[in-house]
Image 1 (cartoon, helix red, strand yellow):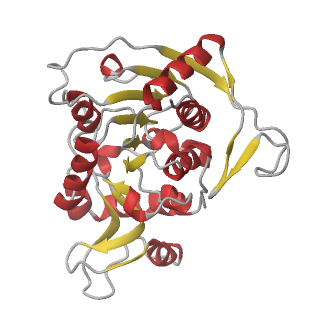
Image 2: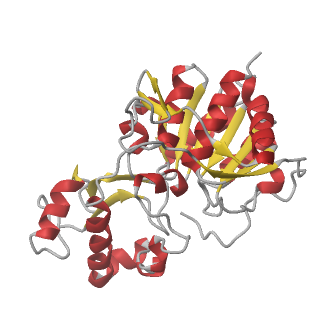
Length: 312
């Protein structure tokens, strides 16, 4: 994962597009108990997704416009970041109260992890905290399933390591996890892999820095840390999906972490429609055909329904 402070290659040379920006005020969840009759959720083949959105006045027009841009798209790629999982109870990284306000990312880089037992102990405390969350898919994940059921989803390229896209019902072949998975650990010496639950159980039993049981080597989450390369085959798949898409929806991502953040730039560069859905501004907003500002769990389902509903 590259240093996010550097500009994204190719961005400056692309024309900034005329975009529309909207802000969502929220989602009417209705009574407690998601999935119950009358709670504002509708059934789909793989679960439930929101039936109605409470969206600010100009946002409704922008949603309709963005949906119209996607209406004719046959090969949509959803590029998802941490903001997609916040409604599942998983904190993001950079927002107030996010993970990087409590854990210094400089202490968790790959090189430091390998050489410093204190960094590994810190990383295992973080992994233990995340493992306890028992997160479940939210409406943003289910919106991707809805798009797949309509035959319009080419794939999801996700920066997230939580596995919630597959938990929501997407087949693994439609999900490309560019930053790896937190569901497994891997030994950096022998390559042995296993369920993260096993490693966390050892931490909870008192091992602050568990070693590989097969060879005694250093183990870590099977994720891509800062300073660690994305596996070549994974990156090739992400680039292939991007090159073949006719629309890319970047949702819940700050779009600053390279090289993943270069994918929306590449999609726009070959003429694909680019829609950005995020709570905060991103450096690629000027490149987008439409920008929707708000929570992923509110806006992505509404955008998908608008796209499917306005298809010629």
